[in-house]
Image (cartoon, helix red, strand yellow):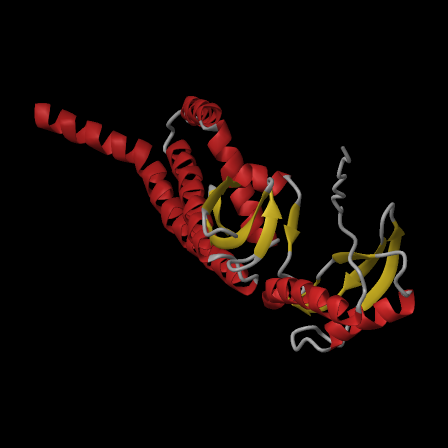
Length: 270
């Protein structure tokens, strides 16, 4: 009699919860299949957009866990479990974590934006947050630069993505901005010819765009010339230093004076 009672109770439970359990299993199987399709499409889209590898892995994992949490909530709801409080707990936990990691989340968001919009890539020479350096590594939270004196510079991605970024490499060529002053007694045309000859005779100065030499300013003690050669980005410093040296040599050879302060000695008689 007791056995029959338990059997009847078991059948009642099966009748009551069986369809819900079966429905939950079906939803889990179908939902898992849909998640796989979504993740596959996401990977394909990111590969096509040439996303950074570390960003792709992070976004795929984040999407996978988010979708699975949603699926679990749906399955529990199908089985008759109260999911409102469960969702509230997840939301509260997410808010608490978000407040605790506010700075880190800002850096993470900045890293995602940098990897998506790609204002620079590894190897580019950039100027940002008051620092200049070649990009060594782009991570989720920080970007590492190698400074001109071979020092490592680590910049948080939040600040980096919200500030101005100057990319010196992206265009492939750079203009070298130089200024040289000569005496007011010097002939302007002759001086321009000498300066232009220095530029056109340098092997790393590009012919297109053409270099330019113009009178920039009539200063207090000199006529200042703007000297503007163009070069490949990787040749910038070679051109900068070579042209500066060669200009001094050429001006001296042509007898064109570069003004500088003179000290006059006064000899007292007595």
